[in-house]
Amino acid sequence: MQKHTHSGPKPPQRVSLVSLTAQSLLETIQSGHWQGHLPGERELCARLQVSRHTLRAALAELQREGHLEVSERQRRRIHLKKTTPKPAQSNVIAILSSRPLIAMSPSAVVMVDELRDQLSRAGFTLEMHVTPACFTAKPARALEALTARSPAAVWILFSSLEPMQSWFLRKQLPCLVVGSSPRGIALPSIDADYRALCRHAGAMLRRKGHRHIVLIRPEGDFGGDIESEHGLNEAMQGAEPPVLQVARHNGTAEHVCVVMDKLLRSPNPPTACVVARGVHVLTVMMHLQRSGRRIPQDMAVVSRDDETFLQHTVPAVTRYAANPAQFARSVSKAARQLAETGVLPPKAIRLMPQLVRGETA
Image 1 (cartoon, rainbow, N blue to C red):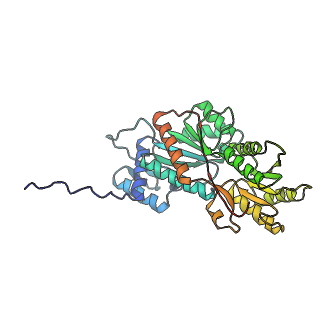
Image 2 (image 1 turned 135 degrees about the vertical axis):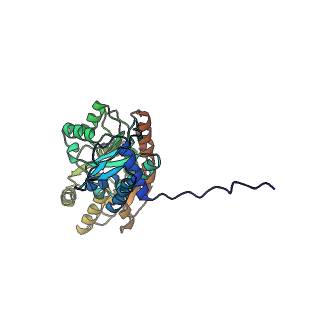
Image 3 (image 1 turned 180 degrees about the horizontal axis):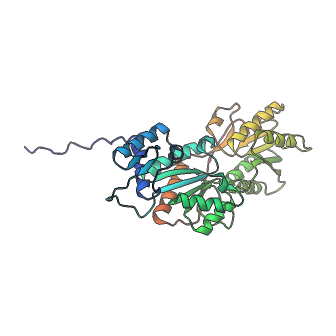
């Protein structure tokens, strides 16, 4: 009787976060990304988005394997073995943001976490660079220094405006815009379809009989906000169009309230508003209630964006919800293609969020 040598498929091995972190560090070291010494623990934790406990365990693992040496000043010197090959291409994909992860919206945090997981599975390391100087009207010097100091296969740009996008376009550095680009900026981008979303929201409010609608959004020429205005304007076309107003604020709760008071005291106050950014929806609703206005009887409220905390409001917010995991998959796929091939068509990928019907409109 022949003895079977195969006992069926083996169970998948579980890989700890410490091992994944050590692997990412080693691959980045071998690519030549760092020379001489590693950066400090705080910078490494921020780039890799792991805790200091996890980072130290990963560093200890690399030290035991002979890839690092610790000096008397506790600096970790890189010790490259002669047999270690140097990959021809960087495996680092970098996020460039004006705000740290802890200050981002909950949906953005979920998206970044999903993105890091998917890129890690594909053999890439995700780094995050928080450099406000790159987000000014003249970012060239800061961008030159950053990209020279921390080279990456692909740059993922969060909340970027025209000056930064124009710089990347001129330098021909591989980048992916998470958001929208102004006309004339031929870069690949991924964003929600704010134009179609707001066209739908405007048509819905118009069917409900609203004759004065306001878009409440932050100041600045962000592509998604501009597309939102276009969508609402398109919804207002036709016979007897309602009045459409755009009210801009500086992002603080105090200024949102000032803008709201000005709208409510006008001779022809709006009866419906579309609000950009989930956090500002809370301010708008609470200020309306504090002012004695009923929602939606006196003012209908539609949130252009979704956040997890909006699921717990009373009344339930009418809003448009995107899937952060689906968004992350689209960003990951585009970033991997750009890193592996060096090219990506400068097209706009737009994902349509779903309407979540609530009690505010």
